[in-house]
Image (cartoon, rainbow, N blue to C red; front, side, top):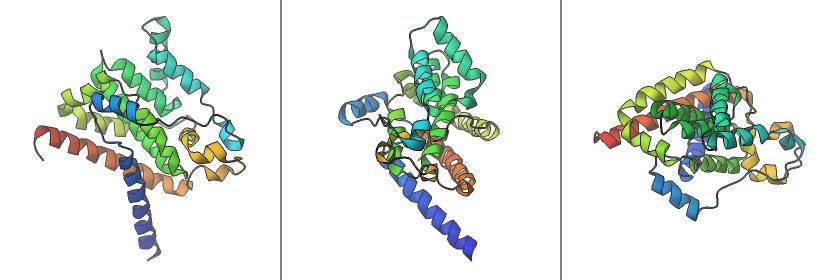
Length: 235
């Protein structure tokens, strides 16, 4: 009976959290023009400027520097940055995987879509484990970073998307996350105001993580399947 009640409670929590993500407009694929409108109309969340305590121990500098290198004009350092990330992708936060997808999208579309899928699932997983739900604004920030080549490739290769999504899920299961998974908390109101004295205030209990991960994978694949079915006229 206890297990049944706990399962029901967890399901309700997932539903509330996913509803919030949907409210942020985190559909699977959106026209680039819509993303541009979001940039104009919405205040894109940013990370806390002066985090304290445990929040101050979350180092975003490496991530910011790598995102900048990947987004730079073509050159030796640009190509070196691509090789560095691809040599150990599990060491990088989702913003870097989004940046990698963007930089690959024009010439290597399917590889770009793959890294977008991985980055998206890892970002959502990190968000769902964060106690401060206002930190989900970090997902909106990531969404607005998607460039036109990556956005359009989702539509023109929709017949390949389910296979790519399945491959990304398999990769996610096999490759550990060696980056600081608390990163998204810096987008929240708590990180901006808390003294950060309690390390336990950032993430939900670790016992909940496996169920959250399974839910993220199942929901991601379902969203891709629905997108493909809708665009193919099957729905």
